[in-house]
Length: 330
Image 1 (cartoon, helix red, strand yellow):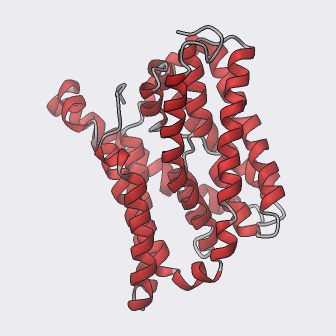
Image 2 (cartoon, helix red, strand yellow):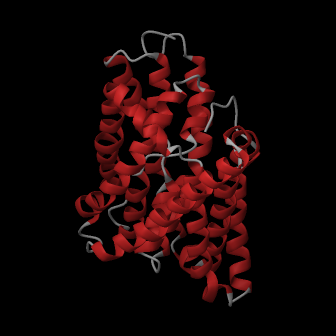
Image 3 (cartoon, one colour):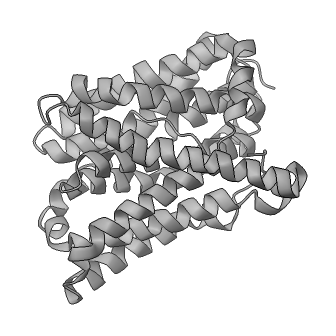
């Protein structure tokens, strides 16, 4: 993903598209009883397509660059895989202990750092996009390895640890889509060239992600309308810890940036990666492990809808305070 000055039409319209998909699902679901019977299969295929879209835009070769910037990587990994998950668990314990399935969905959402569009927002904030490109694949690998650890530590009393189900989910929703995406990228580069691919197809991954996520959300809500309506009050509660989570993540990234005297470009990158979450991966894992527990998945979707407007505000704040934000300016 190259640095961009703004969001393309799919990125900027994603919250509206996802909200529309959710509302349409709630409206159409009760009118067509047959949707419930096919919803799980369509959601299943949509999430596989969603992960393919993410994989298509993930520069896995950039992982080699990580060895040159181990100090920043150590900081980002510590924030994303130790501090932020602990903050998320604390918030879930305070606000969501009475709703275990929503608790579980919130945990899955907060422990998976973003592996795609945080780079767009980093670029908009004049942050270090090239460093973010190197960071991206390492964070993807780490979160896949650590998800079972987080589930065991933070939600072991809610759901039993299912190693076989987790392995199956990882293979179907991660290994296979990524393998197919790698083969697709290679085929395109060989037949059309890398320059053609970058010019003509750079927005295709985010378009695939937006459309497949919208389809998945529509059928999730259409197939489980009554369950969602019956638990609307409980689901609304998740908004508060989600917003507090974003605020604390923002504050932590800025405190650490000033404390360790990071460059502004590194501060902007750290801020964006600590706030943005990999909701598609969390959603795929939730559906793969808990296909019959829609509240887990819906709790994640609430975070998805809130995240983009929050990131837009974060970029505005970063740009406004750019000269002095992290103590050194740019």
